[in-house]
Length: 61
Ligand code: SF4
Image 1 (cartoon, rainbow, N blue to C red):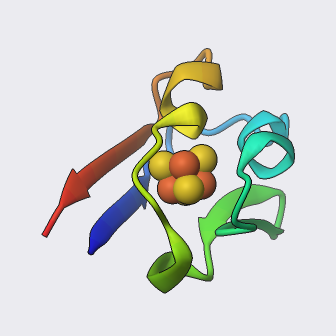
Image 2 (image 1 turned 120 degrees about the horizontal axis):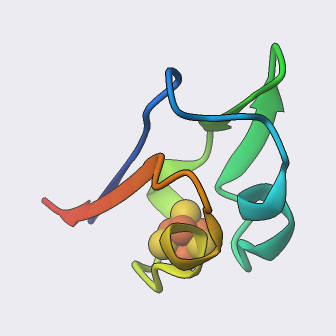
């Protein structure tokens, strides 16, 4: 299992992670990315790589 964390202080809401995630783990909630479907995460780290703000961390748990 993977734990996806979004630092809301860093997130600018550009939706890049929402668009790139192949598993639809992330959605926009109140203008920020939110991991709403974490069970589906496959740990590819595409969201981490695309985030210019370094707001996302993905850890195996
Ligand atoms: S690590 Fe991959 S599957 Fe998991 S939330 Fe990020 S983009 Fe989606």
